[in-house]
Image 1 (cartoon, helix red, strand yellow):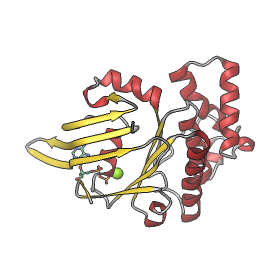
Image 2 (cartoon, protein in one colour):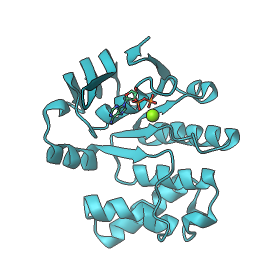
Image 3 (cartoon, rainbow, N blue to C red):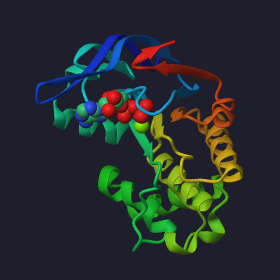
Image 4 (cartoon, protein in one colour):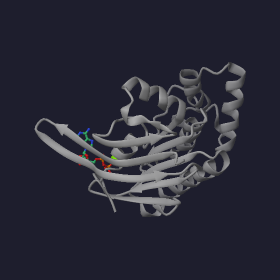
Length: 223
Ligand code: ADP
Ligand code: MG
């Protein structure tokens, strides 16, 4: 069974009297351990697509299955619990806590979501820090790290809860070319190592080429 199954999904935003069709009649499926990108210009629906798959929002129409669960009918609360169990997130602007070290940033979801005991927690954090080659930087604060290093920490934070799926909305938008490629290749290595499915968006053709499967969005439609 596919990890993500999307059937006849549309998303319409309503602001006052104006309706905006952000996604129109999307059908696709994504297998386990896939490395998938959504590509398209600004406003084409990438963020909307990732928000729906990441269970941050609901479709206006259609069916979405993630990890065998029909998430489009979930309540807000159920979506939040499901995200904590199944999905990790990487953000364009890293979203690290400035007052926490790299180690503590990675520890945060384990404390908040998983409530793992301290010794188990330490083992998980050191393991994932090692995987992203940031073990020697673990006591640094985000301010003391480069953009590429911050995103490596963010990748580790997304992975530490051992999610089935990691969502990354334009994870390289704030990075230079070299760091962008490094972060995407790191994500791909993590997919190979842990079998995690990665879904990311980009408008950068060079980054898009690193994906195994690319979906192009144009004005809310798959092309
Ligand atoms: P992308 O990430 O590719 O730039 P988005 O998914 O953010 O595209 O946006 C798709 C379309 O939906 C755009 O026309 C955008 O203006 C609109 N849109 C996105 N979010 C909202 C919202 N919360 N309310 C109203 N319109 C929105
Ligand atoms: Mg976007």
